[in-house]
Amino acid sequence: MWKITLQAFGFLLLAWFFGNFVLGWFQQNNVKPQTQHSERPSPDSQDQSCFCQLTGVLDDCFCDVESIDVFNNFKIYPRIKKLTERDYFRYYRVNLKRPCPFWPDDGHCSIKDCHVEPCPESKIPVGIKSGNYNKYAQAANTMSDMTDCEQAQELGAINSTLSNQSKKAFADWARHDDAQDHFCELDDETSPDAEYVDLLLNPERFTGYKGPSAWRVWNSIYEENCFKPRSVYRPLNPLAPSRGEIEGEGFYNWLEGLCLEKRVFYRLISGLHSSINIHLCAEYLLDEGWGRSVWGPNVQEFRQRFDTAETKGEGTRRLKNLYFLYLIELRALYKVAPYFERAFINLYTGNTQEDSATKDLLLQFFNEIKAFPMHFDEKSMFAGHKMEAKTLKEEFRLHFKNISRIMDCVGCSKCRLWGKLQTQGLGTALKILFSEREIQNLPEHSPSKGFQLTRQEIVALLNGFGRLSTSIHQLHNFRLLLKENR
Image (cartoon, rainbow, N blue to C red; front, side, top):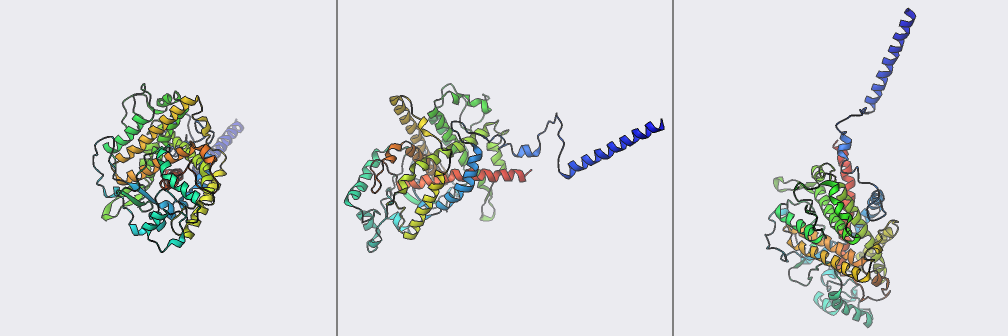
């Protein structure tokens, strides 16, 4: 009897020691045992709810989120950031005084951070301000004894050593530009209201501009230009208040009923909106005291726009559309690389050393893009019956052109600046994708009348893609911030 009792006591003592050991191990390693019926998610899962479903292959293409993250953050972002800091890409000529063509102008934002500071004439590189705005070939350095105006009239920043045939081709450009299938409403760079803006001194960030004016712009874009079926009543605009209709991921079943081209159009606009929202969250006005504004990341604002719970599951779709837009513009840059690789193309500012370094950086950038193995295949678009495809393509182009005109209705000047630049950048990317034959037939040693880009389009294309690259890089930063805020 005593023997059995001692054995039982020894067993209980051994179980007590073992239980304390296991509990101590969990505490030491910060491991919390989970019960099967736990009602509250862990803080870690709450903090990462913006990203937990942002993984895997994207719709309508064969590329995954993780591959884009690595490629962009380590290969592309450092190069595009350096490239857009060069003189050729930092000065953008834009008309911020064009009236809104769709509704009465409700006045410009009076918040001081909405203001855009135009670049003084003395700061503009001579090769940019003396050109005829649309061209970018090298000017003759031997013409230093002529005034800027004389140079512009004589050659418009065109190398004086070019042949007569090449000069005639340059002269034909202006006439051809009018007939080109532009996807954007281009500003008239010769207008007295057009001014050069230094993009580095006027960064995109949250200025405080919001409310009915901002809502009306995005509502017009989504409701009137995104091929929304009449059977769908809920507003597509993420800023619109809920009306009790189907919400969350289930709402987007209507997209599956659209043809690929219209589905792509919606995803491009949604991706652009997501990218802009990320910029505003990353550069948020945190403090405005003592005449000095403090800008930085706003995690709560980011959660409100992209958190799975806050957006009823729509946040992940918005972020995936950003990645989709990134692939579209990446593909356009891949396709247009031969255009810039021609020896006579020089991004002219008037500084020979600067221009040579900029061209080298651009070619290195294109080499990285060529190495990416999972490019979007645009050949599946507009591939049906010839006449139907042509009609759909024209509808696609006109809808996007209309969106570029809506940018003149943005009340905040800084928001208008970056809205116009990014829509023009995307419009230029679409123009490139739909000009494959013209690009393939480019002459090696002379300009082409079949396809060309204005300097305004080039600056918008690179800076617009730079904004997308920055957005994906900032997503990585928000992941880290969400972990720190546990």
